[in-house]
Length: 509
Image (tube, helix red, strand yellow):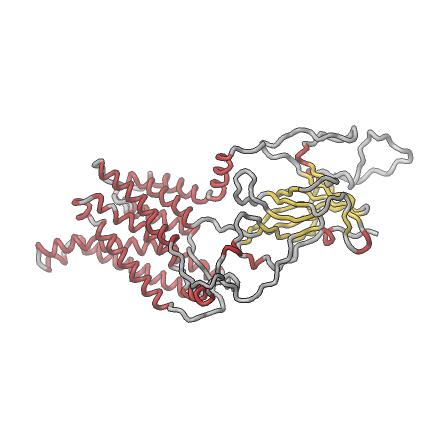
């Protein structure tokens, strides 16, 4: 039974974003226990918004835009990756402290015009300004430390000439200027005079937090590589603009519209509305930082053997055809146990888009073709979901290479007499119609739980927990399929030799 299209899309969305959904729920519930007057209970909601951005960055935060040349191998280090993640998480707090420091400047300037210097130094705003400036400096130093110490994460060996210092300087200058301008617009003085204009301040802060967090670990080395390599169509390389502009403007417009509409109706924004901002941040975090699309799935074939006790001795007289056979040839997915023999298997994901060919960057050298993911029984891949057309990682499709029930396995003229795929239970919603029985002793098994290779078989399916049974000239082997971790980088599997049935089943003799 097919799932309705809206429900299929909803299931895919929930599966891919369960972490962000849990974060939004947690922030909404936690808001109710924050006491009034607390730092996070500010009336403009900037502190709670920053907490949401920082938490979302902890789950999904990474660099957006183009990265290193796709043909270069990157360095990987768990320590350096943790430092870069820490820099991404701290960036929203640095911008918040700078935003608050700039928001206090108009108040201090007004006090300075009506009082002398001594009274200005005794102002209540001055300690808050000093605390925000100190917070900005401390978080900035921590971010620079994390970025510089963890710089080797994702680094490559090609260092073409590029303006790394100029890029850092330009980025820091634009960040400080934009954050100071946002703080001035969101100051209490502007809020009292023009609430709609003042709403631009928190909106700009939100866009800046998401954008700077996404670019704080960007490498000028990567952009220099792409610029030096050029494009396949001989055009000069230009950095992408759409995604950074969407990150900066998109979330800010939504937040500005929310606060602006409240101001039009004469209701100021308060901490009671902070849960809407948290949900808004979580939604945009899923858009800006989607889960990376894997290119292959690491799977394992566990060799399994039947269980159930010793076989009975062979009778001296022939038994009737109504008596079921006993022993290893009668397999049941519920009465199997794994052995210590495992076989790695990397199954590619067949998507509607081919990123390798979509990338317009000119290759640096000729790359040998990847080994074909073809088995004796056919081609194996995770195909897109037939209902939604989106990528799925739950079912392996096997297209049989031949239309024969018997396949030669190489040396020794061994023949694969039978290939059967078993499942213990059907999935919810699948038909439980019993398969047609051949013998009287056969149990009533749902038809979807048994797949057999016949002369007209063209396609088979493997899922997590499926049992692949291969019979080769009297030898029977059963393998339990386990679907494991996804692979993001294509270089991790392009030179991997796909396992063949010959590796798993003896030739016999």
